Image 1 (cartoon, rainbow, N blue to C red):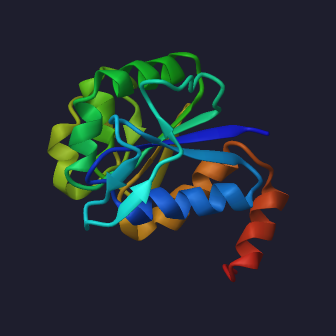
Image 2: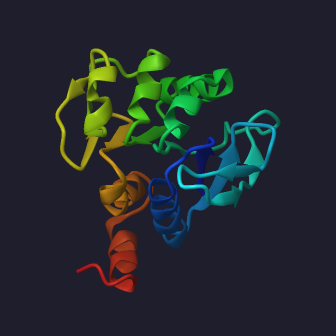
Length: 182
């Protein structure tokens, strides 16, 4: 079973985390949330506490196919300030594994000097913090092994684009039908 890891930092956006989590799980993927701190309990940007499945510091995430960075404030800043996140992110990207970043999380790519000059989208509030990326806007963008989304309002679109990197169209169509997306 293909594995997916979603990195959680205090201040993460719930919709940007759990809409993709739900879609990917329904597609038959093994999805795990990973706390970037030493506490499995992580608080969302809106104060909702979530218990993560793993800790980044004592987990081997190298067996995954996809690494997801949700946005949310200050979640994306916390991700960007973590050396452990940077190491895992750089490893995934450089090995050609899939990386997904939504909302403010594309700034984490910039902070770790990866995927420069790639086409991306992000939240309009951080597009001046993404350096030399090719910001094209829109709900979702895929360029190579990088998938980006603009924000919580397009979390389902982001989730389905992430899924399209790992499963076939029939699986995605079945999931869409099961949740009444026509």
